[in-house]
Image (tube, rainbow, N blue to C red; front, side):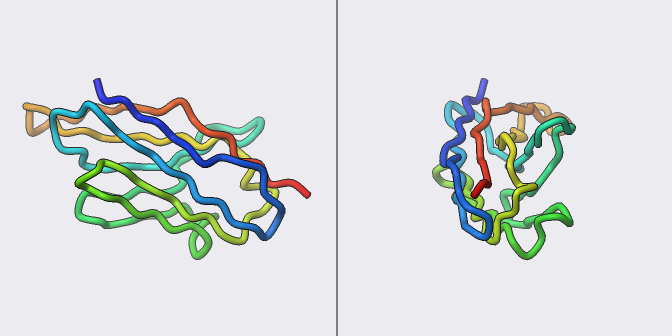
Length: 121
């Protein structure tokens, strides 16, 4: 099983920036896609951004233009730069990876435990 660990969640003021990191380890196969989800207080977990191993990135409408995701395939790491943060960005941010398997038609999915990002004055 792939181990996934997030880091970087801290308290920032509105308008500030935050950089989250995700590291995946113990993977025997290629990590196809890496993604950031978040769960805001009282809301469902939602996909914020994702990036494929070919560096194609996708973003939720609410973060487009403010968040940028990047990855290092050699190290199996991903980062998300979050700018112009708003109160509504307060959430637990989770990293998820989709991992290739010996079956070309199937992927495994692994989650990290999350990191808290809080926007507050």
